[in-house]
Amino acid sequence: MNQSEIIIPESSLDRDCTTLSRHVLQQLQSFSAEAQDLSAIMSRIALAGKLIARRLSHAGLMEGVLGFTGESNIQGESVKKMDVYANEVFISVFKQSGLVCRLASEEMEKPYYIPENCPIGRYTLLYDPIDGSSNVDINLNVGSIFSIRQQQGDDLEGEATDLFQNGYQQIAAGYILYGPSTMLVYSLGHGVHSFILDPSLGEFILAQENIKMPPHGPIYSTNEGNFWQWEEPFRDYTRYVHRHEGYTARYSGALVGDIHRILMQGGVFLYPGTKKKPEGKLRLLYETAPLGFLVEQAGGKVSTGSENLLEFIPSYLHQRTPVILGSIEDVELVESFIQDHLKREN
Ligand code: AHM
Ligand code: MG
Image 1 (cartoon, rainbow, N blue to C red):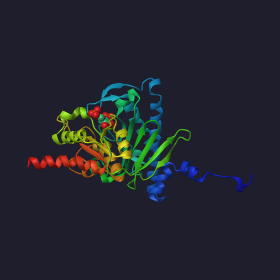
Image 2 (image 1 turned 60 degrees about the horizontal axis):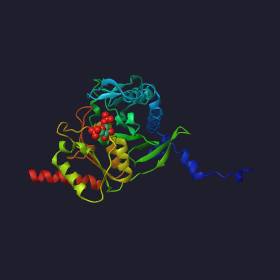
Image 3 (image 1 turned 135 degrees about the vertical axis):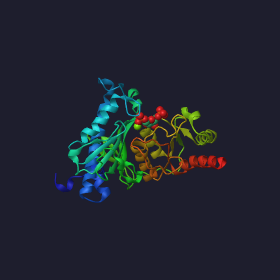
Image 4 (image 1 turned 45 degrees about the vertical axis):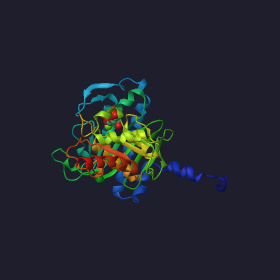
């Protein structure tokens, strides 16, 4: 066969070669040291995702994967074995990487410092290793959430106060969804892009570029079991969707899957404060700020109910905030109930 007879299916081959690390370099339009670092960081996050996906796929067949450890974390929540494993996976992939100085996770009271990576690695990885981990035991979707910030100052005190900044300080954010396929969705502040893990290649391959969410969607996603614990505006909004055609409820108890659905199809996710927990349940630095960053990049909106969540400045590492995020019109509809309520009060 001579050269002219070889037919290469250019588009599918190009697609298979658009791996995550290559995509990061394309996004930054550069081979600078910073671009190389971010590309390498994303490759390590992808490796963590592959390791976690591998363990999840055998979870019911292996010893020591399902169930609780018997310990409680800093926030008094029972720790699951998969939480511990996934937390350690992220630490392990970043050790001796020269990329990241600190890792701050929902599962650890204080950041984990990797002094041998400093001062080369001036980045901090913030992450929720397994979000929605109660779904693991029943073989339903879970996710990992991540965010990358630049370390500012020396953090000699070990308090990481430089992380108490707004969500626009995130250099990158994303999630890995462990569903029927393993999917990684990320943004460097230049749109939102999704990748699917091709198990035959062991690589995340580009699936969709520049995801844009519709300005309105039919889905509302919230734990209505908390209805009587909510403030009146959230109850009014829920009554509104009950009484109007065109709405449908979807809630899996695992944030990443619920947000992914809304990112693709439009709608709104709400986790308001409750009487017992006025700040809500979800953590700003590891959950709502990274997901809010993605949603805003996809043309949506994220709010605490009283302000843009991405402008909210935390005062401690594990700060929680109420959250409303999703399609712009749906978030604004929820906010309108809050504003109406405030007007009536004044
Ligand atoms: P986790 O990080 O401890 O798993 O908790 C976060 C999860 C989210 O994924 C989900 O949206 C929420 O908790 C569900 O909470 P609830 O059971 O109160 O509805
Ligand atoms: Mg979580």
